[in-house]
Structure formats: C-alpha cells, structure tokens
Length: 333
Ligand code: ATP
Image (cartoon, rainbow, N blue to C red; front, side, top):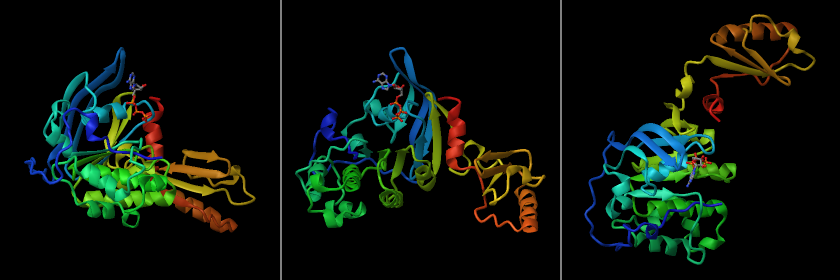
C-alpha cells in the first residue's frame, strides 16, 4: 500500500512555482507557539453531523496523534485543517491562517501524506522529487530529502519498482520536499511489516528533530505510544479524552495490573486469598487490577514459593494504551 502527498494541482491556489524562485516566506514558528487552534469545530454532511464541536490546540514541534474508531470524524477534521474541506461551524487557525482561505504560500508550509499513493511509477525516486520540488517556493535539497527517508540506495530506482514500504517513504519524502513547517501523516504505516514500521517511526522521529510539527492519525496504539507527545481520542465526532500517552484516560491514576498464567497443574480456585476483588480470568491467564501492587505481589509470591510454582511470565504495569483506548471508545462505537 502507499500514501502520497496531495499534488499542488488539486487546489486552485497552489500552482507550480519555481524551485529556485525567491518567494517571501512567512516567519517560521518558534517552539511553544500554537500551530493549530480549533474551537467549536462542527461539520455536517446533510443531516449527519460527523464532527460535533471539537477544540484542539497543537504547539510547534509536537507530534500529536489523533485516534478514533472508523467513522469517528478524523479524516473530516484533518481535511478541514488541511484546507481541503469546508466546515459547518467553528474557528480554525493553522499556521496563523484560516485554512479555508489560505493561499499558495500557506500551502507550501503544509506537507500532507495521504493513504492513497500517487507516486509517478515511471520516474526514478530522484526525478520524482525533483519534479515536486519545482512546485514549491523554497524546497529542500533533493538528495538530502532522499537521505532523510533512508532511500539513498534507491535514488535511481523507478518508483514503480519499489516495495510498498519504500513507496511509502517516497510519499513521505514528497510531503517534505517543500520543507513544510507542519506535516499531516494519515495512517503512515498501515500495511507495514514490523521492521518497516519501526524504520518509519525513526523517520518520523527525525522530523521531530528537524522541528516539524506533526499531526498523525493512526489505528496503531503502539505507534501513538512510541511517537506522540499528546493524544486526542475522537468518538462519534467528539473528543472523549486528551493527554500524553502516559496520562490519557487516567492511565496514570487507575492502579496497576498484574498478569500471569496459572501454574501448570493448578486451578483458579487454588489462587491465594488477598489478591483483591478485581481478578479476571481469560483461559489460564490471570489479570489482577489493584491499587496496591506490592501487597498483591507479596501474597502471590508467598503462595508460589510455598508450593514451588515459578510464575515465569508474571508482569506488572499500567493498563496498556490499547485498553485505555477501548475503554474510552467502547461505549461510543
Ligand atoms: P476512518 O478511521 O474509517 O478513516 P474517520 O474517523 O476518518 O474514519 P470520517 O471519514 O471523517 O471518519 O467520517 C466520519 C463520518 O462522516 C462517517 O460516518 C462517514 O460515513 C461520514 N462521511 C464522511 N465523508 C462523508 C461525505 N462526503 N458525505 C457524507 N458522509 C460522509
């Protein structure tokens, strides 16, 4: 699969410019400045309200992850922020302007990577980037951008001959070639194998180091956990929780979880008293939710030592981000 930047030709105001042309560029945003501000955003398709009054504030240099079930309204919101969709109500400012009225200079400061790939199959990676560089007033250097997405060894390969993961990297390179301040990444690693996904995360981390602000939509909780400074969860057009990966949905306040498998030859009735009332079973897996993990672990280890059980797979931690997400969105789906 692949994703691609929207080409300039899709919007009337963004006609190709000269790669070397001297177009005055608005001052770059500085750390801490608000890059995206949304107040009371609503969007209705006919009678159906897909976005139902959302507020967002994203600052320069943040990686912000926007999560939510299918149909929650993520794409609708993102398209409004990108200036590709009109809104029904609310105030929206992106890089200091209303994206609904933004001009070509504004668009050059916004990189977009979509889910559908549109790379030119007959062009080499370098040719493709050279072509796109011509659409922007102050593009990045082509070879530097190819290196940034770790495609140097494929620079002279035709785009049509690349693997899906490599094409996705071209898509990211195309979104970066205009040297944008803000990058929208729509499900950037869907369909990637685990090692390609890790590699993509490193590329995205690299963008953070370049000072880009990144708006990420993803269905992968580990991706949000790895990359995001902040997360907002959308369900049925409303934000149901916002926080860091560690604090989202009260993750840092909800107690601990102890997990282990019943030792061979034991049954759940043989577990010791004192693990607390919140003990769940799934097959031979046991989950103990507790506000007092040390006490519960003490009870459990005393029991295991007394009987010679090993509990090799025991783990203690907070609820996973996926569990928090499912709790937050479960009722709304
Ligand atoms: P996914 O995770 O599946 O991409 P999403 O969160 O991006 O979902 P949207 O694509 O924003 O969701 O859709 C939100 C709701 O609006 C859905 O119920 C969808 O059917 C509806 N919708 C989206 N686009 C249109 C449209 N052009 N006309 C009518 N309804 C639409």
